Length: 120
Image 1 (cartoon, rainbow, N blue to C red):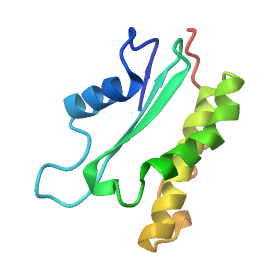
Image 2 (tube, one colour; image 1 turned 180 degrees about the horizontal axis):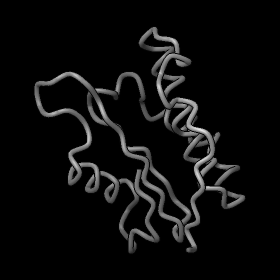
Image 3 (tube, rainbow, N blue to C red; image 1 turned 90 degrees about the horizontal axis):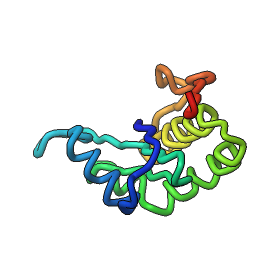
Image 4 (cartoon, rainbow, N blue to C red; image 1 turned 120 degrees about the horizontal axis):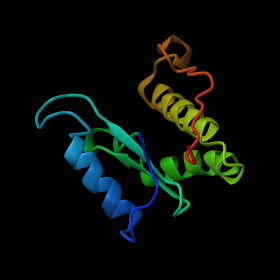
């Protein structure tokens, strides 16, 4: 997860893709696994969930848009912690349904309250 002030005018998709590549989000080529990045640009009032190729079938754009729709009310209130929690829980629920595991068995899937003060 990355919370930034602004992308400085860059497209949120391009910016998040650069961050994901720079951080090495996802498995090395030829290895199993997957990864994702939630990027929030506070002043721009934009967000993006960047998904690695290994997760694209389970988390296509439509699924991440749905998760984003559930995050939106939290963003509107400035409650970034609740938005992040909603994202994590949405991703875990989606992967559990697609990959056949019980989301309740995932350590940390009930992350509790994350407090984030972007103005600090």
